[in-house]
Image (cartoon, rainbow, N blue to C red; front, side, top):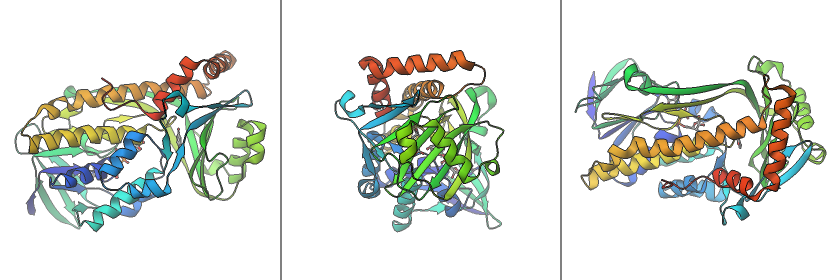
Length: 397
Ligand code: APR
Ligand code: PHB
């Protein structure tokens, strides 16, 4: 058994853990990241790719802004399709100049990993049997096994950045945590393909009687598309041809005609869930990112929420070490949750507006169309969509 010490033990090397590590490093706070999987496995996961300005700013602050600067595509609008007709929403015009940037989570993760290895920052990959100890007291530690050897890492604080299925939230006594959850009765089937995006200036969100479809991008030569499908479907049920045909049927005729298709380079199913765990601090353990909350992917808030949690948490830890104040630590959970619930509301609303719900039938479809008709004509409703899409300010109150 080896024994080492650090200030902050970070569990999980997804975007939350890596970004927290980068921000702590900038402030000269030592930390170690402990990750269950290999680097390739972490990079193999394809997730959403729309960054709020707050997230882009944070990547710059963390010293990894070049990737998004050179590889990201700025979007000023979104396109809503319903009743076979496309309607642009002028997001920038409605938000006094704000934008979002299309840049994949995989790319964000790769940039953070590259910086970490360049700076030689400690990351333990393929750590087995990770366990958290004594976070309720003054001397927390994390134990794990690597290549058959047992290790114990003593620390001041533990950051649980280990995603929805991680060990951190599961280590909290059941009576100390409240979980709120909604599981949606359908899934998304996603395809990545090396074809130019059908719409490179805006994400397309399509409501149709056949279900939801989304057209997104990773670059000018790589696209990401999704269709709503039954949760019971399997990836094998969907040939590339069936997938592209289905996307086409859910779009307006002009986009359907313009869309270029090609062989999928990745195809995966994702369930849709809304989930929040409260609080996000338990003594010397903090939860951040998917460890504490999940949003359905409609609106692409998952990564952006992870980034804002990490901003609040890194500021709190920096305040603790540099200013000897625990005010940030004491307020972390409340601050983070205020922003999380707003993003939960937005993601739930957009999901509910755009998808077919088996139990709502034709009446539900008409209600969605009436709301969408109203939305595209009402400055008030369009502004609400736009200001949530670009992301609410970090200090919204
Ligand atoms: N021990 C160590 N690491 C673990 C453990 C464990 N017991 N369990 C999980 N992990 C690792 C996972 O392998 C993963 O690499 O924690 C990491 C968590 O990463 P993510 O799931 O990507 O979560 P997070 O970093 O919070 O990123 C949130 O991911 O799911 C999307 O929409 C979400 O974009 C958002 C982002
Ligand atoms: C994506 O690019 O994967 C994406 C974009 C916008 C969303 C969801 C996913 O709302």
